[in-house]
Length: 372
Image (cartoon, rainbow, N blue to C red):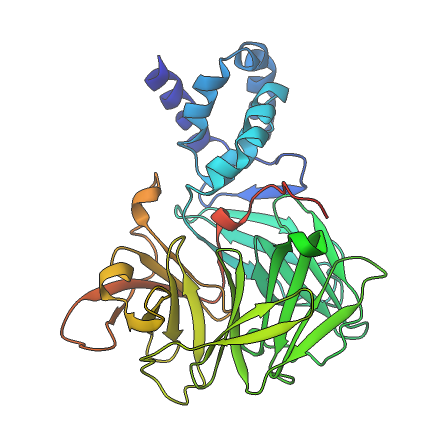
């Protein structure tokens, strides 16, 4: 019975163009397909009553075989299906592979395009993006900066949830490679905190809570910081000499040097973080070479044994991840490929790396469960 329902649902998926989305003002386009909106309405009217009565466990099994775009449409079939989609949002998203992401350069409200592994595109308009520029992405939120007001707007393209961080006190160069912002949850500050470094003030780490009245705070580093990253509940920074530091927000902003041994690249200006769920890496963004932080031994080690099991995703927006492909239900061989070798011996193990201008990671796009 499950197989029959799954085949029926997949048949509809491949032969109809969805034009609705979980009430989030998204629209869908699928190359080579005609618009059958009226047919979809008639089909929904005829069978919605019986579909809404399907067992939720069965719906969940079917839903987990969908792609992200079909999952959005799945939740718009009826209230029963929407309930299943919302309650299992996080479980679904963490099982899906990255999507290509592009942002229109128009001056008014910008359009965001997400493309899945099947080359199908989702288009959505980003609210309050008039006069802004996209400078990054964090935790499923696109980061927009409005230069005149010096405000950051963070927008989730799926849920349309927004976070605003007003009056940034330092200059922001409108290039993604010159900016890094991460959104973290701080129990001690009772909410989400936006942590930022910029190329123009690369020795400053600034942070703020969202809201109209929130203030920016900052700490100063003795050297130029190239990247920062949130990993297993801690904020880390890496500077041009490969020095790893832990950044703590409370009770006072503090940057603590971690005495890690054996860093292989001295005076490297192109370092950035990369992590899986269990491992923290630092990548040379020019030669695409990686080393792993061994916190037990407090040293850097070759990542040959660990990163080889992952697909590595890098982008111009410093949005990177190492993900195990065996966690995905769908194939992942259609990505543009770039092979790179281990930094210590180019003749040995080669790993698979995928590069694009900007990646969107569904596993970061989780429904908020914390306050603030």
